[in-house]
Image (cartoon, rainbow, N blue to C red; front, top):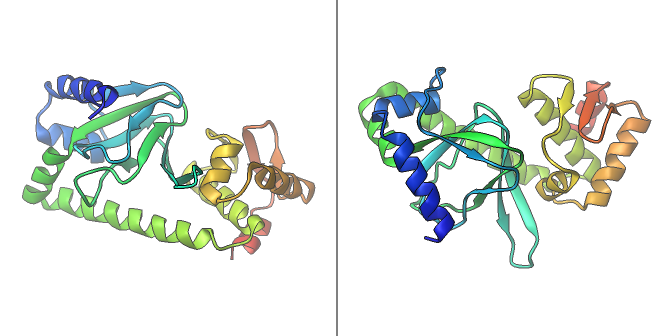
Length: 226
């Protein structure tokens, strides 16, 4: 494990001392956010790296996170974005299959994976939440794979609708860059920008600023996404 990972591990261990396993699980899956096992990450700072031990599970408290892989040809493929309330970093194996970075300045709640699994073994509610979370992650991965075979317009429309649903509103403040969107959709940044301009010209969306987007005609986007 490299120095950055060692430093993260030390901070998490120190932060976790003040709470038992059940409290940490509440921090992860409950409505009450407890103080203690929290870490702050500046924009673009790595939270964990691909192939590092998956010793911890994470929940976004503030900010946003991207999970990604670097492909053999050097391209970046973003697999998912996570926003406040989302849990990430639960792996099937013992090591992380991808890397995670803060898209924007973020506060993350951290719990030991062993504590979560121990609680799930004893508490049916925690176990059910864990299984539900895993099922949602698998469904999201399936939907993302299906997205990548659609046309550019269909991909961007689907992304905007999903983002609006997750951030609960027709007016969306995009935490990610155009390059992030392109790397998530498997498109070039030029194609993403051109498609957004086309959507604005047809009044499907309004680009109030480079990061603020208003969905003016959700049905037009839904028709593309169907």
